Image (cartoon, rainbow, N blue to C red; front, side, top):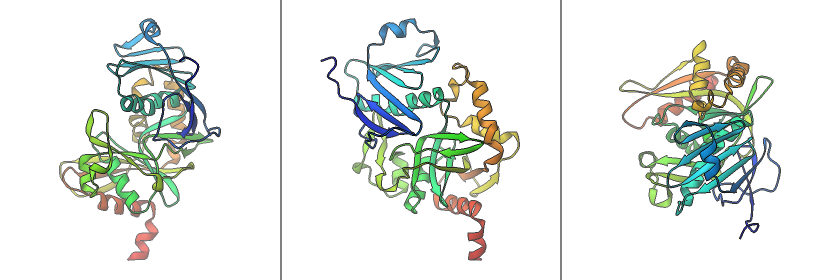
Length: 312
């Protein structure tokens, strides 16, 4: 009955999230978030969806609102960085709805709030946060999981919120879960039967990491862009000049919305405010084989060169 829906309080991405939809992946909280609060509610969006100006057949944007439709799942509306309204399709799978709430919708929320979101994984290395970014299939989550096996904590997987204050970037935690492909589980010696498949992606799994999660923000001390080559050794090189700005732009979460939402000037200004203070590297690996151990060694030698000198 209307008016009897219970809102539960969660925390993720620096937000206190009050949701009518259960979000079991997220830690519970009743405390205000560092970035603010967010409501996730169920509502009827058919008429609003018909009226909103369309960018594509499945995407509409108006002042302070972004809407998108996923056939067979739901219509989603994100307004003012403060409210996500979900209009589920008949018989829609709740796992699928949650995937879009915690992924695409959150990317828009952060952009509306003026928070940079990078697409990748971030981890605690040498008591600071480092981001792993790269195209789909570059091995971000596999390398992140291997690093976690070596004792490094996860800050965020997939969506990395970055707060920038006076040119100093801060990595904000996401929530304690990874998404790993079957091949990654195989490489890491993990049994997929222990994990829940993500909706309609039978070979990608939700892996809880509650005991290996960094729950407080940390300074973002560097970025590694993962790149794949057909053959060759694992190698690392510094990213310099304008390529640094392009790297940040290319790995902005939901970057295709920057222009339609009218936030290009804000986005460019934010990137420019800290791009020259943040070390960036391109980490290349061969296409075939499992090279996470070599990549890890290369990363640690790059950020902690004294360790290598001491071991000589």
